[in-house]
Length: 264
Image (tube, rainbow, N blue to C red; front, side, top):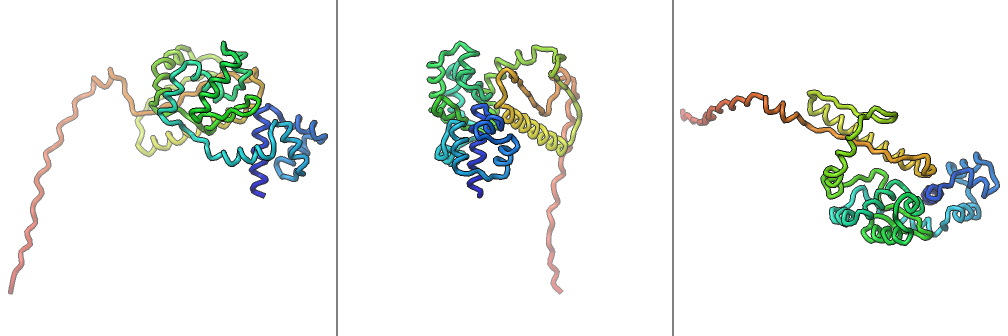
């Protein structure tokens, strides 16, 4: 039964990639949406129905099986040389960011000055560095997890620090769905660690929402950037006004113990 559940989850992902929902499946099978939802949640597919939904999703039972085997290939971060390869071409970086946002090749061609032939070549380059897998009909399978992040201080993060951070903060952050909070305080090491864990959970929740909504039409979604940062820091102007620390008191030499043995 575990294998059936894994295949069912793979089928759900294949449907999402084609932006198909339970309503589409219900129409294909001649069932109600509630019945289809029960099939996916509790099982009960006949082989014929399962293969019918596979065809709707543009895959096969064998293809789903191969996908589940390849599922262990996904990574949460790339190697530095992979990021450097992506950074070698502005359009390649654009393509990588677009597919991370679950845009299809057609979406990218419609939105940017990239031809379909050029887009396929870029996707093949990303496939060569193990960032994605290009499937039949130009479907894209990412080889990274939904919690994927660029390497800390890696080539791509350095690029965004140098080029993008001024653009990001060139705003008042007072419009709808915008916020910037700046908070200062003195905290213990334990509290700092707790806050870091909470920020990481928030980043994971952002990734999960991004994954859950990838089936929505492109017109219902817009690029959103979430920046979370925390570190011990003080303005240089403040630090320059600090009093020098007093010298550490000299540590007196330790007395050497002498063991005296008395003989009676």
